Each structure stands twice: as structure tokens, then as C-alpha cells.
Image 1 (tube, one colour):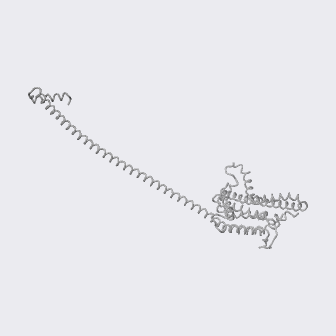
Image 2: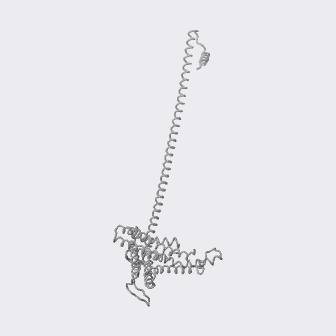
Image 3: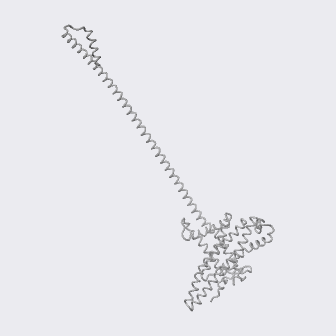
Length: 244
Length: 164
């Protein structure tokens, strides 16, 4: 049975080094580049005809656009429009990372905690900067709810600070863990199908049926986690702009 | 797990930054404005069509109002024409009736006059005949002609007595 961890292995394709730092072009980078190419091709080619009544691809592109625009409007409001390209990029990048990872043999870059953490920390730092830029030192009120008795500050402030600083970690770990665990389950079930099915056809069907069901579930999780990552970013953005 | 091997952090972060920034630029400068333009254009077209529909509806309503006004006017006109005609006819009929009745009254009056004259004539004739007959009868019976004045008054009294 193949090692279920092996699929997460990073394989350098073009070894590169810039100023002593390893920046090799790896299988992870290949998938990121493929994502960028596919997303761009999909979103530009689909609306090339600028049809009044959209075709299938154009309708899909419009659905993505309006879905993210609506999410941003509902969660952040009009001030959020500036950040629409960023939120949209974030959603598409995570979504395509998750979905392309479902292709057998493909590498899933969202299953690497450093990738998800990289995006989460950009969101976290960006949101913090936006908060201080909009509210100045008043943004620190985030850590102490309005109207709470002053004596509770000793408990509330540390809790709020911890919860605020744990945001990038929870954001990163949620996506990474979901993708990693999902892919391990798929791999293990696939191993069962092979090892059981090789000797006995009938028992092999059972893990195969499970594998089919889990594959459907994983597609759902791929969509859901992209959505969750994006909507949490929107909620953090809302907090920074409107403060609770 | 390879995910926790720090040796792979740098290359992944580097390519994440490169691809993500590239995608951000492509999205914000190319793809999203394009899709947004398509959506705006559709919205504009829909609004235009709605406006046009509203305008046409208003025009149709104005046309209906004008038609109804014209209808009401012509109906009122027809009404007044009918009224005028019937009034005129009634007046004419009135006049003719009056003329006719005046004429008839005149004829009746003339007839009455004629009848009265004829009656008088007849009465006078009766008196003359009576006078003659009475004179002749008296002359034959008495032998002498009676006094003309006395005879006349006696006949007049007799005629009066008989209601003539």
C-alpha cells in the first residue's frame, strides 16, 4: 500500500536559489501556475463574446463574480468594494487549488500549511492595517467590548487579544487540515480497494463504494472550504472597517 | 509530514507570492473589469428596455385618453345635434298645429256667420209667408184686409211664442 503521506511531498522541478534562499520551482508551484492560467483563461475567454444572454461558461463566470460581490456586499458593505479584486482572487485561488487537487495524481497546494498560512497572514496583516488606518488607536477598542464593566478588562482583554491573534492560525489550519485529511482518507480508501480487490473482488467493492461517496464529499469540502476561507476573510474585513 | 518540513517553506511562499500577485493583477486589471462591464451592460440594456416599455405604455395610455376624449366629444356633439333637430321639429309641428287651428277657427266662425245669416233669412221668409198667409186668410174669412201694423205685431208675438 502506498504511503498516504507521499502525495504531499514537494518535488523540486527546477532548482533555483536567489540570495541564498531556496526558491525552486516545485510540483506545488506547477499547480499554482496552472491555477492562475486556468482561472484567467476561464474568466476572460468565457466573457469574450460579451453575450447579452450568457452561454454556459459566461453564466458560470458571472455566477462567481456575483457570488463574491454579493458576499462582500452582505458582509462588509459598500466600503468593501475596494477589496473585491483581492477577495475574488483569494476565493478563486483557494477554490482552484482545492478542485485541481481532486484530479488523481495532482498536487494540492492548499494541503500545505505554509501556503494557507501565507494567505491567512496576508489577510490578517492587511485587515489589521486597514483597521488602524481607518480608526487609529481607537481600533484597540476591538479588544475590549463597548459597555462591559471596566473590572472585566483583566479577563476580557487577554481573551480578545488571543482570539484576534489566533485568527490567521485558525484560518490557515482549517483549510490545510481539511484538505490534508480528505486526501489521506481518499488515499487510504484507494489502498483498500487495491489491496482487497486484488485478492477478493466482492470485499473490494465495499471500500470502492466508500471511496466514491468520499470523493463526492471531498468535492463538496473543496467548495465549502474555499467559501469558508473567503467569508471569514470578509468578516475580518468587516470588523476592521466597522469594528464589531 | 512534508507539510511541516521548513525546507519547503521558502520555495512555496515564494511561488505563492508570485502566482497570487500575478493572479491578483490579472483579475483586477483584466478579468473582473470585463465581467463587470458585461454585467453593467446587461443591466443598462434591461433598464433601457424597461424605460422604453414605460414610455410606450405612457404613449398608449395617452392615445387611449385621446380616443376616449374624442369619443365623448362626438357623443356630446351627436347629442346636441339630435336635441336641436328634435326641438326644431317640435317647434315646426307646434306652429303648423297653431296655424291649422287658427284657420279652422276662422272657417268655423265664417260658417257660423253664414248659418246665422241663412237662419235670419229663413226666419224673415217665414214671417213674410206667415204675414201673407195670415193677411190672405183674414181677407178671405173677414172680407176686409186687416191692419198691416197689427198683423205684423201679432205674427211676431206668435213666432216668439214658438221660440223662433
